[in-house]
Length: 135
Image (cartoon, rainbow, N blue to C red):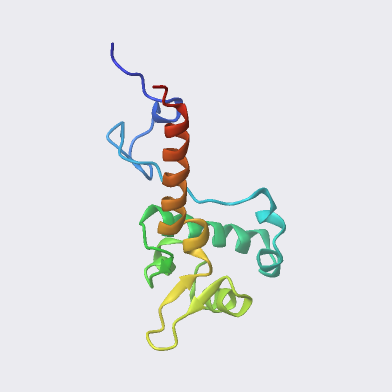
């Protein structure tokens, strides 16, 4: 019997992030908590437009698997993510700047969305699988 795709894999649009030609390659996710919208750093950005821009920067990093790095091209891809906006994000603490290279990195990316999170989720999944095995 053929295995059915999960509901999120059955879509009518093609070319969306994480999808190609109607088949799922691997969806991209950004881990955020319900408290995200009330986080002091996010609120310090001010306008809803700037908060949305920040969310788009997070989505860009997830979609292109940058490991939390924010490349210069983001200013051409994400509307509003100009040099001034990114500098404000550094000042607020949403981004960290490497003083030697000038590279911008999303604060605590690995803790919430990076490789460390993937390893922890994989461990938890394997633990649950072992618990469900009956001998």
